[in-house]
Length: 72
Image 1 (cartoon, one colour):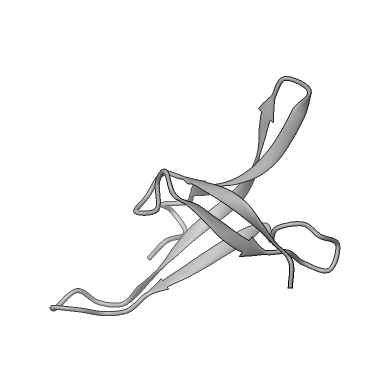
Image 2 (cartoon, helix red, strand yellow):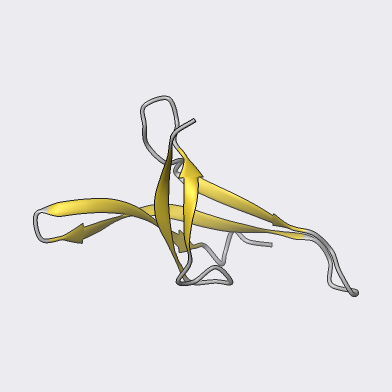
């Protein structure tokens, strides 16, 4: 399965670059959900990141931005 190294901006994964599996049209999903298990009295939650386009000159790439409103 192919993957693309994708940057994460904001939230707990800020600054990380992770390999994200590509979909059937070789693109990254619009939303990426990261389940966080419960530990030491903190309840389980899901981090939600939304895909956005990163433009640099004439080239572009995808990155994920933290969606605090959807994360719970």
